[in-house]
Length: 248
Length: 248
DNA sequence: CGAGAGCTTGAGAGCTGTCAATACATGTGG
DNA sequence: CCACATGTATTGACAGCTCTCAAGCTCTCG
Image (cartoon, rainbow over the protein chains, first blue to last red):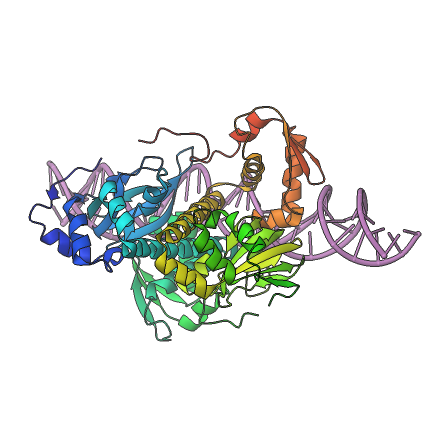
């Protein structure tokens, strides 16, 4: 499926180093890493290339070592929605592998990317023996479930403008409580961001325009300056969004 | 939080029996069940009572032994959306417990229900020693992630009518490939179903009416007769919905 | 019968998508 | 340097899906 120069882990050096840096594997000891590395393959995935397709059987876990991968679902009549944009350090395919299901989404490189693929066999062997690996995977799946639940909430409770402002504020990540204007960079072209937010390109463009007119942001290409954090934060009033809330 | 008659597992008999029947615990051996049962509490939760609230800390795992629980999220200004209706045999709270997060949703009984609560401590102890329990939990979280992803897809790709027909067809569950008219019973009052489908009560009513006019279904209270399964199945053309699809 | 909950129906408005045209950016070749 | 092609982004007009508000209906239960 994926072409490009593939580097087998013969010397077992660089690939092991690489694997250690993935959060998914961070808690494994050196021996476990070595076993996984032995059956791992590293390859480049150029922009536009498909990593796997929705409905295909799962061959193993894909670790994104660099670049950016677009996860998307498509309808019967061809249109598609971006569910998530995945960058370096994250992993794909655990769910399909663990449940022996087909892939729920398609994955395509939207930038020249580097993938490390862990074969299904070694992963299962490691899972069978290594309780720590099991725990790491469980943690990862929990993280993903939390994220997906939050995404669902956003689509159920928020309108387009609120989803956009929420997305922009999320890109600030750290710096969280500052009130100073800050500039962020959109992680992909606007049509992809729009789809990720379940908006058309046109609607997304209009929303950004309206936010500019309101003096909340300034847009220059992919650079977005968040001018009025205080007001931006009041727009998306998701209940769980802010710090704490006195539930009950 | 929960009142009603609570039955401590002193004799250790009936509670153990009960626990064995939960899919989440089905793969545990008798000893593990006994340990969990020792710290379990069973109680009744009358219709309308809240099991836990969004944002509250998690006290353990809740097993639904009977009745029906509504999981919902609410906005800052009071409106709420039903995310899921949970019946007997399923469990709640694993995610919050495992991640030590607050509850992402609120849970409320929408029928007189019976809950068995497993304390956090014993669950963690069992998780630490018992690889099989870890695997069972992992399987459960994976199932939930798959379901939530499917829900998200439904809301992103389908319109109201398609979500309704998809929901009705899901209630057939088994009998899957028959083409004979079949009658199903809505699992809750229509306003709850509507919210679960992210529709207003009014819109849901109109959709059912339209489907009746089209001769696709017949509605009598909560009984819905699916008259033309073939045409119903063609409405929601989710890609992953049907049997297999030749991906790639 | 009356009260209330659940459900339906109608009219109007809002958010968002579709289609089409235009601008803007970038890179290529003459 | 300009002309052109391509990919990207914006803008406008319009239609559709869905929500809101309001009223009326149906059924059950006391």
